[in-house]
Length: 194
Image (tube, rainbow, N blue to C red):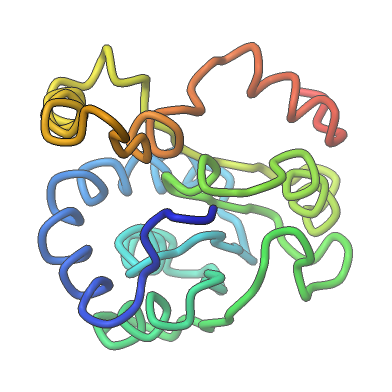
């Protein structure tokens, strides 16, 4: 992702304080609601970022052991610093090569992170590998810009400000992976049956 923002310096703190409450926190409970009836014992979170979903998982699944991963050490450090609940294991990891054995987790969660994964099928294969046979993969993505007024307005403003070379990060990454057919195809290619 050359040219895209890197999450270091003050970025993790600003990310959590300004984007977290609006973009992430309201939806973190949805993952917990999906998983709670299954009472998972071992939960892996990918792309944990600053831990918004991690905190919801730890609180909402009180008997589960939670391992939160992210490729960015500064984001994980921010997540760990903000977490004051029960124990969570924090681990820097690349979703293309997860450092866990086969069938280790009965749930994997990726809260608004799959769109950032550089090779989705490879990452989904890794998720499938670490999931138990009856495990559940829960993830969330945003719809495209056309369905999201605020980021669409920001993207339009950037085109006006930089007409010769507008930044396209919002359109390409956070709001660029929403086609259900493509997502289903990637999951099927990775070995997910349903």
